[in-house]
Image (cartoon, rainbow, N blue to C red; front, side, top):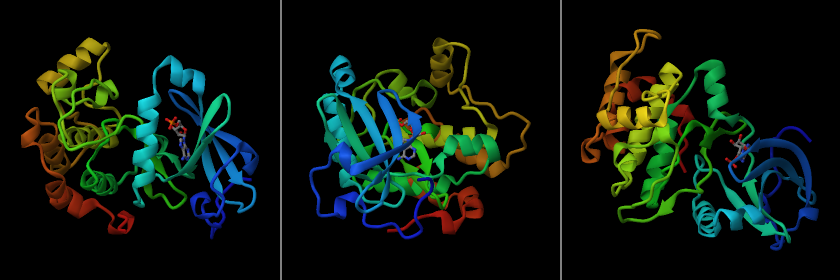
Amino acid sequence: MAGNPPKPPKPPQEAPKKHWTLDDFEIGKPLGKGKFGRVYLAREIKSKYIVALKVIFKKQVEKYKLHHQLRREMEIQTSLRHPNVLRLYGWFHDSERIFFILEYAHGGELYKDLRKTGHFSESQAATALAYCHEKNVIHRDIKPENLLLDHEGRLKIADFGWSVQSKSKRHTMCGTLDYLAPEMVENKAHDYAVDNWTLGILCYEFLYGSPPFEAESQKDTFRRIMKVDLSFPTTPVVSKEAKDLISQLLVKDSSKRLSLEKIMKHPWIVNNADPMGICSE
Ligand code: AMP
């Protein structure tokens, strides 16, 4: 059951059936393992539609008090409709587990691709982020593992477990250390500008292969983030424009970070982004 059919049948949410059970799916190979569960390739038996089935054990949800987080992930991901945002078609549960029926991202993690080829398209990420901003979603957990690719190499933002749909400033400490903005490290209020910082981190990592504030210990990473201890290695050779963009995103004062609109107009994006790779609705 490998591969995506060229013209897939209707995805599960458009099919008439509303109450899904595990018997509706054939389970295939494991696709990956997350913090709280595993993800499998699966096929809805009747429609033959290929999906990714994310399995989360209820015991884990209870142990880590993840109820609110899960509900948020469900609500946010079902409400977002964008070619660069991974779809959540629906969910169901049995006595022990919760199942998320997700759009299958055939290309897997961008991160693996990045390691293999060094090829990337930041403008796709920016486009998807712009959409999330419009919908008032602060993602807060954007990192390479959460960026998936579909069979055409289109970028999909996945895993909204930590995202929050809100207009107000937030006060929680979360996310992955290397991608945290200074205001998050300090546990200060933060808003959508944290994603712009993360874009700067990703852009750097895409170009140099490791995040800019990487250090031996968490303490040192914290310190480097707070100082914005940014340096550009001489190899690989990276253009002046790319360094300029990164420097304008990795700015301590969140209000001075380059806005998404300006990122899209930055010469490096304009000159290097593949317009065919950007999805419009
Ligand atoms: P998660 O629990 O969402 O962090 O997922 C764990 C891993 O499973 C990810 O890092 C991916 O490698 C893989 N994965 C998750 N969702 C999908 C999907 N929709 N399509 C393909 N692979 C996925």
